[in-house]
Length: 333
Image (cartoon, rainbow, N blue to C red; front, side, top):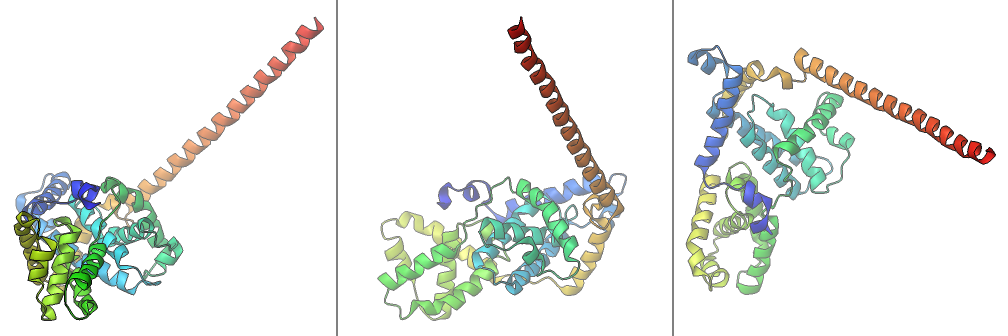
């Protein structure tokens, strides 16, 4: 399924460099739109750089993970995986200065619940959010269509959880390992960490799953090299080098995760509040005026539509009366 999927075609990238260039482009475009008339030094002092945006987004990925972990009712892991995919994809096409990550984060999780058929109402969902829940509800619902548009409506996500189950069943069948299920804690921990890297945007779910299995096996002092080379790729050894490199890179990405320094994050949060697009800030007057005008336009459109239908009904009645009188007259004549 994955090789023919929209995920493979549109949302899987060749390298970290390609992802970095996409993020730099969004950063550059935002500053070019909103920083006209500023000098280079002024722009650097006022706006977030691409590296600063990336650091801040890493912090919000940690928050996404914690939010899903505390969610009630307990959230299935595939819902969490899909939410991470949406969040990462959104910020390949947008700057965090345009759309604040805390608002997009909640929208990504809510949309993933719907797409993955984890049935919670919007009321149940916002009950997990601290603060003004009515405001949170409005933000999530107003951003939902935007998120789908920025994902190009490609909402199906292939996570590594199915391939993991396949590998474990295969290991039980074709390996002599004692109790392969003891690998599960190590596998789950590894997968959780991959969502904090760019691995989901670069590698197939089966490659990430195999990297997780091999990592967990090594922690349990089990060697699965012969299983991979003989059982999995015994008749397709030409594909083995590509797989080995993918597994090596995924494991390296997980091993080199760096958590954002808290003091640095706090400084970037303050900077973001000053430089963010106020048209997309629910607390700004510009945003409130824009939303008010939008609702007024909708009301006017609805009123015009109602008026049109009433006039159309009146006209149809008049035509009906004329048509009904003509036969009578003709009949009398």
